[in-house]
Image (tube, rainbow, N blue to C red; front, side, top):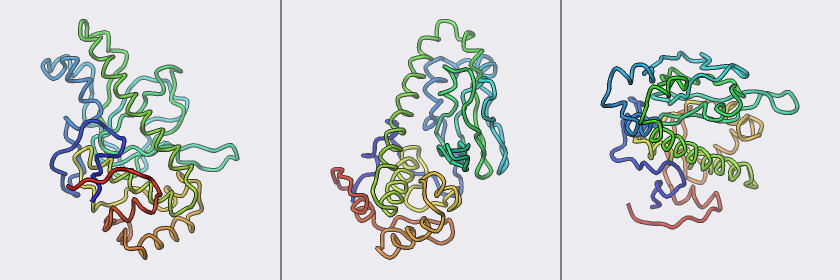
Length: 258
């Protein structure tokens, strides 16, 4: 069986997977953890409270921020799932990115000074947010903070390469298979249930992200089930044959025993 950690995601590999019902990433599997730890925030609670606001709750469909809002915070998803949405060149709704527990978002707004898309909660979620204007309060720890910020941006760039790979695959079945492998490997890398889980997004969301019709996505799910690589009931999903799912993608990764 292929090891999901082989997929190019976070270098912070997971230990024991969390239960499906908890869906809350542990602090040491969170994308913001390195910043908090290296900047000394975990050892200075008062400073931590000035720089990081923890566990901001979002209900389903709540907007975290809107396109063109001024940049203020970097966010890390603690639980749930969010999506960056907007319009494509034809004015059609488009899902640009998904964000799952452990992911950071808002990094791309540091340069421009504003967020370039609207981010909405796909389900009940919570986020931590770092007030970027208060980074100066870190004093001598600023250099460590920026080192970890570069690390986080590097991880995000690796995700962008996955997106290019995803959209470059030839068949709809392959696109969906790559997406499911990405999601499973991401969940594992952040200490969450990764073989059997509930999809936080709708078929329509997946279709918008992959650039396909919703009916096409549904047919691709059916095809993958017939191949015996996935078991899907509503949004409840189980990867029943990881090697088979990998074979569908046509990607070549080394196999190891786990």
